Amino acid sequence: MKALVYLRISQDRTGERAGVDRQRDDCLKRAKERGWEVVGIETDNDISASGKRRRPGFEAMLKAIEAGKAQVIIAWDLTRLQRSRRDEVRLYELCQKHNMRLALINGAELDFQSAAGRFVADSLGSVARLEIELKSDRQIRASRQAAAAGKRVGGRRPFGYDADGVTVRPAEAAAIKAGYEMALAGVPLAEIARRWNADGFTTGQTRRKEGHEGQPSPWQAYSVRMVLLNPRNAGLRSYKGEVMGKAEWAGIVPESTWRAADATLKHPDRRSGTVSTARRLLSGLARCGVCGSTVHAGGAARAGIVAYRCSGSMGHFSRMAEPVDEYVGKAVVAILSRPDAADLLTDGSLPDAEAMSMQAMSLRARLDSLAVDFADGALTASQLRTATERLREKLAEVEASMADVGRVDKLGDLVAAENVQQVWDAKSVPEKRAVIDLLMDVVIHPPGRGTRNFNPATVEIAPKK
Ligand SMILES: [Zn+2]
Image 1 (cartoon, helix red, strand yellow):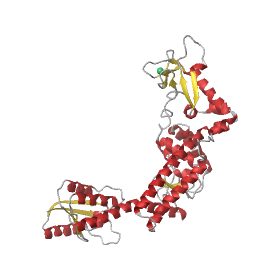
Image 2 (tube, protein in one colour):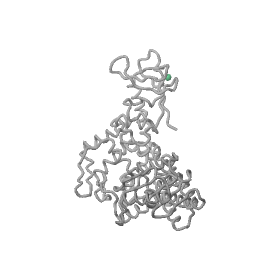
Image 3 (cartoon, protein in one colour):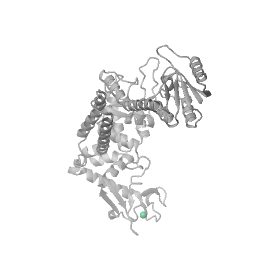
Image 4 (cartoon, protein in one colour):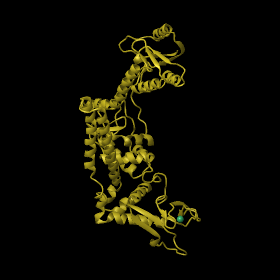
């Protein structure tokens, strides 16, 4: 039979480190005893075991098994062979598929051809699979415990908070709040970065570790994005990008605002992909009244005058943009000046953001307690899986509707304004576009022949939904 030897140099904390030479000697000796022909030796070095580094030797070994180059794997012991549970599952599955024999110098010899060997490998494999599933739950609890003990994981001072990660810095918190408002209104991240820089804020989040004093650096689009996507700003604790529950610190914005920003920044085209790039008020938002194609802005025949054009193949019209923009702006101001404009914010069809936030919290808490129930033996593995799936689905639903409620924040200061016109005029084009996109559908018709004056009947405005 042909054999592959797998060696791994790893840091052994107990000090009983089996040097790679010793590993090799023992493995080769075993091959000789059994009369196996060694066709290859694969070695991995992970003294700096970060848990993330690829293991080229391990991968090469899997490839060799797949190619049928050997029937036996010889390794020092199980811990040498497997570093992660995921690798373990891959190895077992491959060994089963190819009827391999696994010879461990310190440990059993598993013959995947025999029923007993298959049984042992099967149970080892399913334990490994279960551990992968439970691992995240354990990490959640560990990180929760750290939070409860007041320990913060990670050393950088988060923007908006003191180095303790709990005390809010009012000036930075205000900048973050404004950042969310702008991002939700469709203001490009680079513009938010520019404003934060102009206001004297820096990303100088000094490391707590001594000798690693962070250099203050100006904000850029990507660093603004990272701040806005951070659930900590909503008073939520996360682990590896997944929200785990309420944090020990106070949030700067409501969860719905963070959710909306998260959805908007991660899927910029979910509402209108043109918001951040187009310059003209209605470009890409309005539609042609004849064919339904989107309307785009461009220079007209006379220099300096911007026109809206039907983008369809027929090019149904090209008309001056200015009066159309003015008319639509007036319509927005009129709608938001109405005494019942506040109803737009507390739309009866939208559930209460606070209630949804509570619901999400309790769902997360229940998810968390499931793992405990399982560990206590109150749940079987399949019950755990079913219950987890159901809760995750429900949670995803709640989170999605929170993002929708958060979008209504775009209108916030407009609805509350004494003078809506003034607030509207002060908004940037991207902000205005976001409001129009939220409130109405605009359909533009040809201006009509020979008409010099703007005819309001040629611009249709219909409320959304
Ligand atoms: Zn058209």
